[in-house]
Length: 116
Length: 106
Image 1 (cartoon, rainbow over the protein chains, first blue to last red):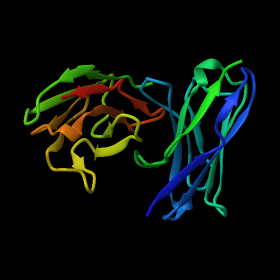
Image 2: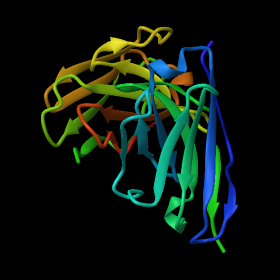
Image 3: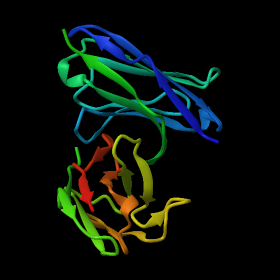
Image 4: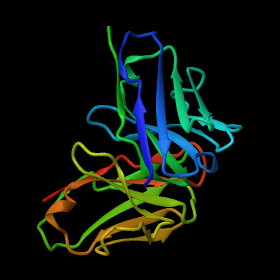
């Protein structure tokens, strides 16, 4: 059974940093690209970033480019999102999702709140 | 970035009704389109990929069609458990983009 479990969310001040983690199980992690998708309170879904199975290729949404980095540790079946220079508009539930083009499995999400 | 536009933004229907949601892409995405259902307070769930392929376990009352720029999601006989917001998403290229969502009320 595929499982994705995010952690690391919380309250952070504007300009601060936070690192999200996603623990994966139930599939061969290194075979799949992984994405981060976020959802601001009461709003729609916004794709944030993707990393290839090997970790060699990454892409970012324009809204986070230069502030967020994505990485993975295939030996630990773990995905990470390092978020720097956080802004109020980054407040959202952050989901990790397995990407096969479409997103076929999603984690439960972790809430990030950027506020003073 | 490819813009995805859904219509309507919301709709109200009765159980047993046929419901159709449309999604338009700002450029040709072939059939690289997925549909998701998000029930209130829950995680998005993949319904359809490749425009018309039903994900395993999804009820057959859901169907998708279209190619190029125009796509539809149809619920043939609406059930009470279909209360949700539905999103389309293109995966023709990066950045991946979603439609704004269609809220289905019953």
